[in-house]
Image (cartoon, rainbow, N blue to C red; front, side, top):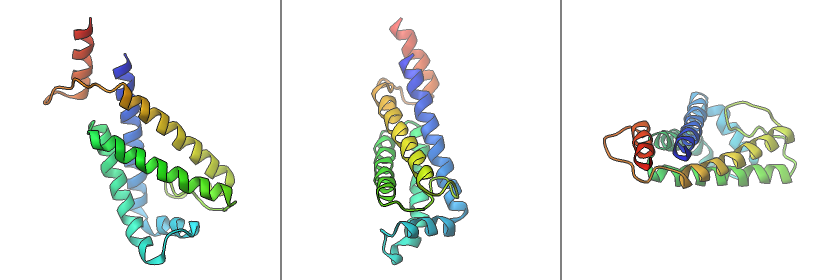
Length: 154
């Protein structure tokens, strides 16, 4: 049962990352503006980050859905960086949009909600990693691996 919950959490977080990255790729100028408002990134790096980060988000999210080991670290690392940025904005009272899913809820309330959402995702990702199916068989889908491993345990 724990492996099924891990599969659900991993797939949900991965899908959120794919969706988030895709929304940013649809409007990189708006995402670049969000990055600029934090005041932490030098201007020459804003546009490359506004395009590159969403591509990495989509790739890492897809990797998580496909249960690639590297994707846990990539998504976890991005979540930690996002939380540091959100914490910086909250502590400094910035009235900015988090930029998480395109245009959203600007201001302190939106930043706090995004921080809490990211913290919940870190905890869920940790649980998904802990309870993942370590006995996956290449060539089988995740669901087949989960079902067959549960049958083996019986």
